[in-house]
Length: 422
Ligand SMILES: [Zn+2]
Ligand SMILES: [Zn+2]
Image: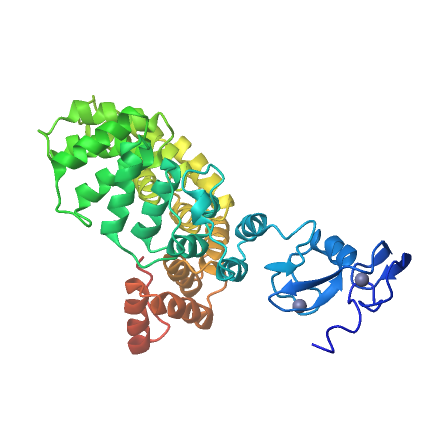
């Protein structure tokens, strides 16, 4: 310890200087002028055994819980400091900042947050779950922490359900969902419904799925309302009842829940449980598609094609396609390109077709790459360019586009003089 006891690393004055000296000096470690009131009391840190003046180290721990020399976490000292390091506070800071190594180190000091935390509102486990720092949460669980908070219990179920920070385990997921659901947590009730519906970690059981979905739906879970609608629409565990299905889809759709908006659209589209209504169907699909639901995007474009084929005006659809295409949605860009190339619902324009195809093709959309190749092969809106056409066909074919693969093999046999037949 001799190298240690030479001078205080905070003020650089020897730690064992003659008693009673008071002086001011600039601390290198703290970066400012400090006044050393007392050079007689020497504090030895645990576990590293480095020594400092009491005044100096007391000032130091206000800004850092670690030894200024070796940066080890300070677990205590002899004699005790007037303001010891608050490990509990340090634990919360580390959880907040997702510093898992810090958390591990604090737990290794023998500090046991579990003793104080089970019924504590300010529970480190709850904080880690709220922050979605799953690995830290797993660490705290292994240190014996648990929780009575229904929200945290639901998050624990979610962790096990999805293998976040822990090994995926449906049985453990169910046990946490149950705890939270019994305390009335809506998300947990819905999740239990899903576990029973899909038979995950339990035997598939539509009756129990319905029970939990009903509880969650009554508490306003849009996902559960949508599931109930689905079960009525398909007669799963209940007698098929389209009217009830529509009622549940409508409730969930009213909460702007995209899958339910899409399902409700389908009921209108097919006239199931409601009078068939294309406008209402389209509106529902559109709402869901605007929220990014892929299946609804497909439905919107499908309805658009239907409308175009039957010669109807599809102004609303066009507006929508323009909007999402301008936002960079490649499938929408491709469809717009197709509409301009063929003059479907719009005035035919190769220029505009090329523009939209290019945007989608540059984003790697295979069908757009194929169409762009076709336009170059046949000189639609551009000079005929066999090489450029081959490049685009090649890109599309590499992504598994069957049309592009077919045309490439035909071109390899017959060369450039190919008849355009879209
Ligand atoms: Zn000092
Ligand atoms: Zn040290």
